[in-house]
Image (cartoon, rainbow, N blue to C red; front, top):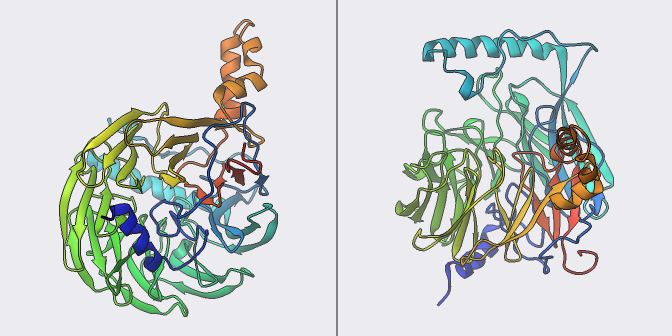
Length: 488
């Protein structure tokens, strides 16, 4: 009798628009975070740590360059960067309406906070005039990290920088940029094939949705769902704004018999299945999912929400309906997506990792993470291991019997991936801590040299042929994790 995993692998041969070991889009070949093939990987770091196989040129990231993740196709690594630079030197004026975190809003009534946000966004738009905005398409060699080409073009302001991950299909790259502009590029040259401004009001909105290329359609969220012809960029359909709201999640392809369909989470906690070429809705379910990406395994769909009530849910799906099979309510996250290995689901949320039975929803184990605010970053799986890249790297065995951490590492300014103890030894922090006020000095040194380095928050790595491709805070890095040929 075939397991759910073997069925999913068989279906993957028909669903994926690419073959081989590419990682051609957000969350990999099948948009589920799983690497389809890999040589054996190391099960522990060398005592001296692991140096990067290569580092790219410096790149802006985060609030200066967005949060897009790298993809790998045809021997190249691609990245989309939306960044800004001050037009003039000197200090910026102090803001009257700075961003308020949740814990700092208690003195405002809902009406007062709404007015505050209106003023804050207006002030941000005014401040944006002091910056020049640029969209860059980056291409580097996947073997050496050497720059192949870089294409820059003037862009426009958005409240947060656009961070959609590129999608590769049939030699083309697709991305949604600022100003609601969908773009298609030739992957060999970086030259524009087509661009299309999507209908809708352009103000300070920002989108992080990544294109899904399926059945000749290019599907993306830009306030609502849009379907474009992948070859020409012509509009195939536009979803009704109130019925297909969404901005940061991404759609997933689903092969059902001889039909190619698509599934997507919407704003407001709903998930729909639709025809890629027409946008025709086939079913909708109140999944309570948030900004995560659905995961499909055969005829099962996993959704993940931002509250315990929403939690992790599993549905049995067909082209006509979705029926809830089970829910797991001991984890949640604003945007992180789970990964499936064999017959088990691995999920991150609220400083926890959990393993859940895909068939029943029963918890197998639950482990606590020693991280301050893990969120948004999604899990990836390869060679019977699961990797979580937030602040550092946690790699654990995909073992339903118990949580077994294999690698727990941080990064320094040179890109060295090593344990905290190794970094402390390299920085000679034991000696520093013997001085007066040594502990305080040691803490500052570690934060500067190690704590402020590592993977860029909210991004997820690509895995190809036993190599881990990470977007660090200011460049792309490649680590050889193979158990031979330099991997240990």
